Structures are given as structure tokens and as C-alpha cells.
Image 1 (cartoon, rainbow, N blue to C red):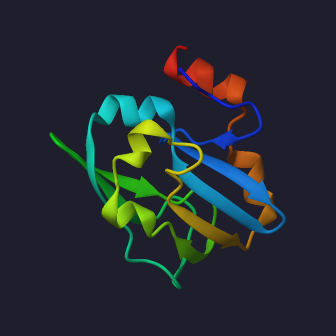
Image 2: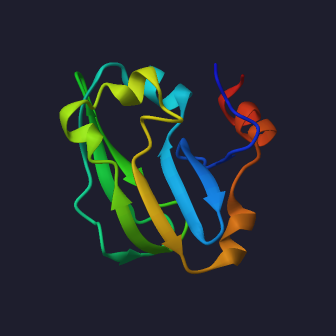
Length: 126
């Protein structure tokens, strides 16, 4: 199970990469393996400002559809449009090519709610 130490995580299996006041978000290797073959990623919240834990989109696998939860409050400023044609990249490369959104986050104090890699490993029993 690939759980990069430089990233932060949520209990809902999103990963977060912080660069200044922008957070890049995707789903973890664990989440994509649990979902199976991903066939569609839908994010229709670009340019919207949402609160922490609001649903920002969905990911559809062959057998299920799962909501995607915002790890930090803020404005969704970008969607990885490459996922429209190749959603399976989330399965093969969840931490690089499979990123989903970028958020200009508005409340830096919420960073404290994110899990470290060790905390996330404990959550999933890795």
C-alpha cells in the first residue's frame, strides 16, 4: 500500500498536498483499490466555495459510486480535466496523474484536522 509521508490524509480516504494556500486533492491508493476499476470522475463544483466535509464530486467504479468529501474549506479552483478521458489514471497513479481538484483553502486552522501518514496507516490497518 502506497502512503506517501509528505502528504496529509482524511478519514474519508482523500489525500492532500499543501503548496502555499493551495491544496491538491485526490483519493488514496487504499481507496482506489477498495473501489476497483474507476470509470468516471465527476466534479461540477469548480469555482464554488464549499465547507470542509462538503461533497465536491463523485467517483464511479464498475460496482459502486462514492462521494468525494472536501478536506478543507475553500474555493475549488481547478479540476484535473485529464480524468474526463482517462479516469483509470486514478487507479494506476492516484498521487500524481490521478489528482482530482485544487482548492484555494480559506481556513489554515483546518490543516490540524488532517491525518499524518502514520495516523492514516493506523486508520486503515496498514
